[in-house]
Length: 61
Image (cartoon, rainbow, N blue to C red; front, side, top):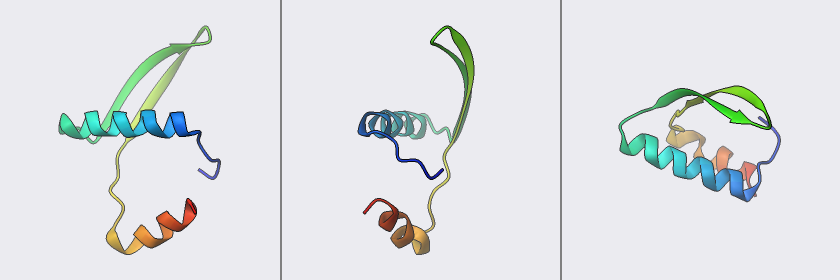
């Protein structure tokens, strides 16, 4: 995904990630209601290999 997320969305995703990892979960599927519609939400956590960290960090600079 090439679009930049707001700080608030990144913070919420970080909190969700911590909760999932704390529950020993690497993915989740659910449905949410927003703006009068039901949305399917799928979250999958994939660790970044050490050799790719530099590339990932440079994306945010």
